[in-house]
Amino acid sequence: MPLADLNIAVPKLPLDAPQIADLMSTLDRIEGLAQRMSGVIWIHKDEAKERLDHLGAHGDTEFAFGWSHLLHIKLWQAKRCG
Image (cartoon, rainbow, N blue to C red; front, side, top):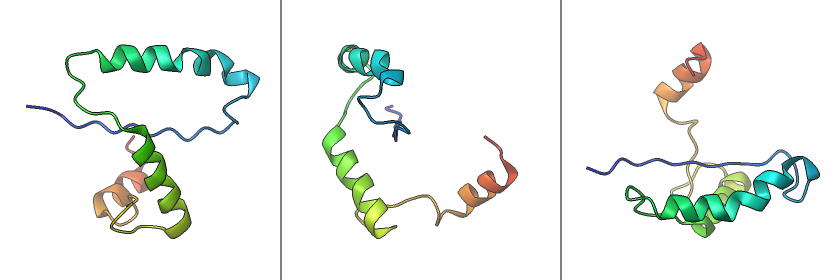
């Protein structure tokens, strides 16, 4: 049975910053390697970026939701369980 995993990264530095140059130069190779793994079913970068931009501009909506409305997430954040 497939297991969903969502990874979203929001860089604190510009993507062309020297501090993350090594990461950025190997990102395509690492993503290509990940896509060839047998467990990867779906990767869609463009839609994720569009939804994150929408979330930032409009807050929680049907198109892009955040975690603020989920009670167990609020509890997890408050107790610092992560």
